[in-house]
Amino acid sequence: MGGWVDHAIWWHLLPLPFLGAEPVALPPGAEVRHRLSRLEPWFDYAVELGCSGLVLGPIFASETHGYDTVDHLRIDPRLGDAADFDRLVAAARQRGLRILLDGVFNHVGRGFPSGGQAPEEESTRAAWLRRGPDGRHVTFEGHDRLAALDHDLPAVAAYVIDVMNHWLARGADGWRLDAAYAVAPTFWSRVLPEVRRRNPEAWFVGEMIHGDYAGYVAESGLDSVTQYELWKAIWSSLRDRNFFELAWALERHDSFVEAFCPLTFVGNHDVTRLASRLDRAELVGHALVVLFTVGGVPSVYAGDEQGFRGIKEEREGGDDAIRPVFPDSPAGLSESGWPVYRLHQRLIGLRRRHPWLVHGRSTVEHLTNRAFAYRVTAADTAAAPGGPRSEVVVLMNVADEAYRFPDGLADSIARMVIGASSGPGVEPGEPEDIADPLDVPAYGWRVFVPTHPTSPPGT
Image (cartoon, rainbow, N blue to C red; front, side):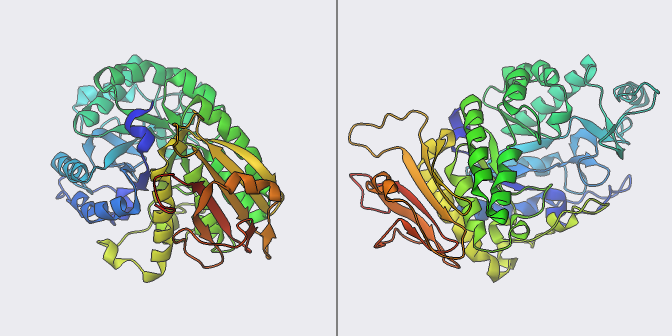
C-alpha cells in the first residue's frame, strides 16, 4: 500500500480489560461508563515509545470479552458512547497517532440478532447466522456463545460495508479483521472495494494464523495479514537455541514481504507473553532486534514493552493473565519494567531512522544453532550517490560463552557503526568502540547500521 503505513509502528491494546471494565455486558438501562477517556494518559507514553498508531481491540457492544459483538454500530456502554470515541480520536490526532479498529465480522455473540433492534430487523438479522446441514447455527471453533455469520448473503456484506464506512468516517484509519482465516477471501473481495471507494487511504489487515498468506492477500484484496509464522520462529528458535528455524522462517518471510507487507509482532492478546516464553531475560532483546530490523509493519502488544509476564491457558478465563488491568497512568507502572521500555525505544528509534526496513529483504550471512548473522537490505538497493548504504547487519549469540563470527563478515560492517548492542543485563546505549566487533558476548547481540558521510557516528 505504501503511504502512511510504511511509517507505522503500532501499540496494541484491548480497552475492555485494559480499563478494568466489567466482565459481562451492563444490564439494560444501566448508566454508561465513560472509560475511554482514561486511555488518553497513555497516548504520550505510546508516542514516547516510538509508536505512531494504536490498535484498539473490540470497542463495540458485546456480551463479554468484546469478540462476541451484538452491535457493531454502538460503543460498548462499559467503555462509553460515540461522543467518547470522537474525543478519543481527537486526542490521538493531536499526538499524530493513527487508529486501527478491531472488526469481528466472522462471528457474533448470541445476542446479536436482537442487539436492541426493532422486531422486524431482529428477524432479518437472525437469518444472517450460518446454519449447518442439521439446521443448527454454526459456532466459531466450538465456542457455543459465538455464532458464525453467513458470508454468502449480500445483506451481511452490506452490513459490514456500512459498519466499516461508519467508523472510518468518524476518524478510524483502518481495520484489523479478526479471524479472517475463517472467512472466504471472496467475501473481502466484495466488501473492500466498496469501502475503499470512500476511504482510499484506509488499511486492512486480516488475522491469519496459518494457510497461504500471500494467496489470501491476493484473492481477498487485504493489504496485510498477521505474520504468525515469524512470531513462532522468533521465540521458538531463541528458547530452543536453534537459529536454523529462524533462518528458514526469514526465507519464507522474504517471500511474503515481496508480495505484501505483513503485520509483524512478538506478542499479542491471544498468546503467552514473550517474557514468559523465554528462559532468559536477555533473550527478549534478541526477539526485539528481529522484530525491528526485518521487513513488515511492527506491532507491540501493550505490556510487552514493560516485560509483562503471563501464560495463556486453554480454559474459560485462560486469557486473563495476558490481558491484565493497567494502572490509571504510566506513573503506576513498576520500576522494574522501564529498562525493557527503553530497550524498545532504542530499537524503535533505529527502525524509524531507517524507514526502508519496512520493505527490507533478509539474507543469512552465518548460521549455527546458537550463532546467527543476517543482513537486511532495501528492496530498492540503489543508494543515493554519496549517501549511506541501505543495509543493516545483525549478529546474535545465544550460547553460554562468547562467539566470534567469521572474518568474512568484517567487510560487511567496515562501513558501519554499532547502532545498538547488548550483553547480559546491558541496555543498548550509544555506538560503542569495541576492539573486535565480530566477538559477541554470551547471550549478546549487535546491530550494525550505515555510517552517514555527513553525520557523526551514532546520530
